[in-house]
Amino acid sequence: NAGVMQNPRHLVRRRGQEARLRCSPMKGHSHVYWYRQLPEEGLKFMVYLQKENIIDESGMPKERFSAEFPKEGPSILRIQQVVRGDSAAYFCASTSTYEQFFGPGTRLTVL
Amino acid sequence: EDKVVQSPLSLVVHEGDTVTLNCSYEVTNFRSLLWYKQEKKAPTFLFMLTSSGIEKKSGRLSSILDKKELFSILNITATQTGDSAIYLCAVELPGTYKYIFGTGTRLKVLA
Image 1 (cartoon, rainbow over the protein chains, first blue to last red):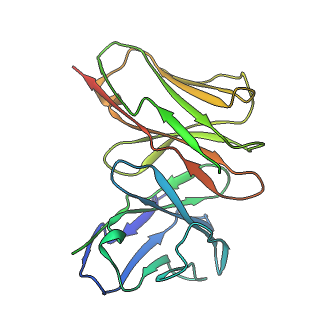
Image 2: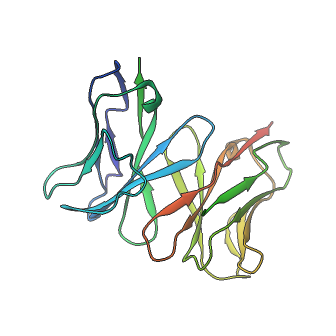
C-alpha cells in the first residue's frame, strides 16, 4: 500500500510564475489536507478537501491560492504569481479517520 | 484565538536521559489532541488523545492529556540518537476538520 505521494519534491519558481503542487493520497483515502510549514514554525492548516468538494479553505489566502481534488487524479495546490514569501514546505496529508498520513512535502523556493 | 503552544522550543540531551515535552492549548471543547514526530521529512503519527488521565504508551514513548488544565505531555525514556526530531502537537478544533499545530519542540539526543 503506497503511502501519500507528493510531487515535485523540490520546485523553484521566479516571482510572478505559477506553482502547481500535486498530492496523491493513500489508496482508499478520499480526504486530503494541505499544510504550509515555514522554517522554524509548525504546520499551518490551509485547506481540507474531499473528492470534488472543498470542505474548509479558511486557512488559505484568498488571493493567488487555490486547491482542488478532482474525481480522478491527484489533489492540486495552485499558487499563481508567486512571491518570495510563498517559499516554504507544503505538506499534504490524507486521512480516512482521525489519523493523518503525511506526504514527504514539496519544498517551494521562489527566487 | 485558538492557540497551541509547545515547550521547550528545543532541547539537547544525552542518550539514556528521559525527556518530557509539553503542549498547552487554548481551545475549548476540542475533539482530539495528536502528537507527531517529524524528522527530515513528513510528520509521522505517534498518539491521539481524547480523554483526560488515560496514558497512551508505545515502547519508550508515552503521552497523557489533562483536559482540565489544558495540556498534554509526551515522555520519552532512555532516549536514543534516533529520537532526534521535531515533535509536533496538534489540536482538532471542535465542529471542524481543522487542526491547529504547535511550533514543535526540536529534540537533539547526543551519543
